[in-house]
Image (cartoon, rainbow, N blue to C red; front, side, top):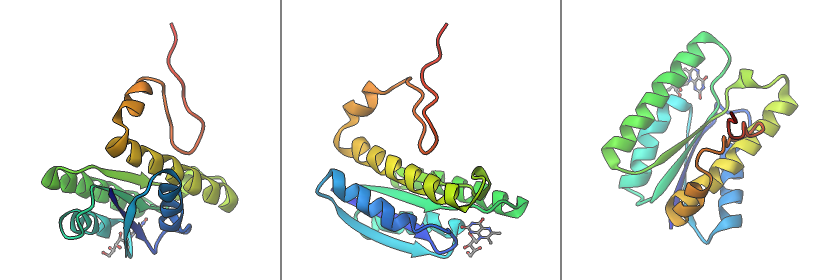
Length: 153
Ligand SMILES: Cc1nc2c(=O)[nH]c(=O)nc-2n(C[C@H](O)[C@H](O)[C@H](O)CO)c1C
């Protein structure tokens, strides 16, 4: 299995290194890394990881800032990532950590690491163990902060 890891220099946490560490803990995977300046550069990086570097799945790691123009960039990047998935017929797991989700730097670093690690496990499950995802269907899983849990009557 070959996993693509696309990340950015804009991010304030080395999300690419965290993703690679977590991927290698769970499976014998080869990893292709591609670092770009910011989130809007991720869609083409992911498409190239799939088409040119033959990745089975890609993680797109990014950190949108807290300003309105950053949120607009994140939305545009997200649309590009969906488009790249449809063009390539491969999953691209979007792992965005918005700077304003956290109260301070320590929480931001914790959240970025936690969300990245949990999504790395999801990426492996999507390709190697889809039944494990099926088992968790409807359980209110969240990546980073606590799981929401299932809704009860
Ligand atoms: C305004 C802005 N905000 C962000 C952001 O919040 N997070 C991020 O990763 N990148 C941002 N960028 C940079 C763009 O995504 C992109 O790297 C540049 O427009 C160059 O293509 C820009 C230009």
